[in-house]
Amino acid sequence: MSATEIIEQFKALPASERAQVAKFVVENDDSWIPESFKQGMADAEAGRFVDLDTALNENIRIISARVASRRERRNYEEEGT
Image (cartoon, rainbow, N blue to C red; front, side):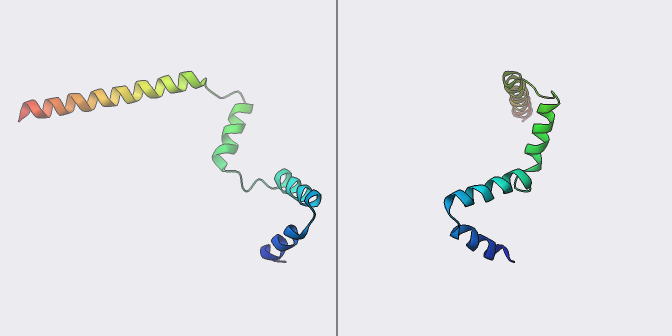
């Protein structure tokens, strides 16, 4: 049976039976879930996560350092010409 045939049969089912099929697919097939999400969930379950404020502050610190470095480089290049 092809996917198209299954989809057509699914559409023809009553709403309660479509719900049963959808529940079965969600519970038994995780191919639609990105691997990065699965890894993130595994990390969270294992206690490997960081507080959102910490992550945002660290990113802001990194971005600020890059901006400052680019400013310094541009100023140096402007002074040298």
